[in-house]
Length: 262
Image (cartoon, rainbow, N blue to C red):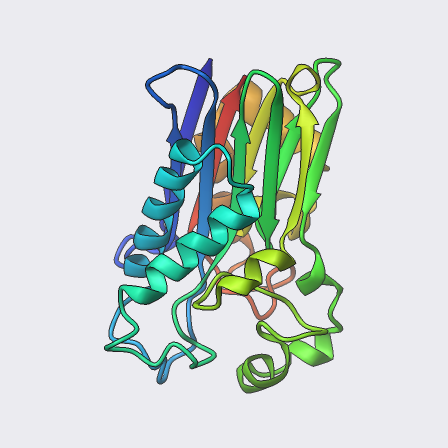
């Protein structure tokens, strides 16, 4: 088995809000990967004493433990338990009902000798390669399907779209959101490689249009995850003044790639 994990902050002077891990149980039977992209809140009140990195570390740690230790639970059940555990860690000090309470996008995958399970919530991505070399992308595309006018202001997103029916969902403090995730499973024999990416890394495809998902996977496989992030950074710097591609988006975003050959 080959694994590779790269996570780079968008700004070296700010903490990386992403989280990534690969869990390999001592039994040697299967494993898991977790990728979280912390949602940077707009400036202003969040109702919470804690930072986004605190939240993603807590949630990611819980997910890493649960995916490896509780093979009888589905990934949606595991995400629900991890959200609840994290919420309980700061419920007495923070207003968890605030729409800007710390939250994250989620990619989970877990494999056994028989199958590969996956879960995607919000705008991170999971690439799955078959033994024949075919690459399939698993996306939760609810955010990308919203009209641009609906995303005009942060206040509008908070009040009408974030974790609301007809909008999009992230892992925040409500365990029931796990039921909104895109989930599925594949036979282990039909899966050769998994690649999880936060949207800071998927920019190579969905913002800058440098290739399709199969091209992105081929780049990571041949040149490595760090090379994909480096190319994204070059494209971001070139677009910094014209804002041709990023428009309202921040110039640099935290970028995380986890690559696992089964």
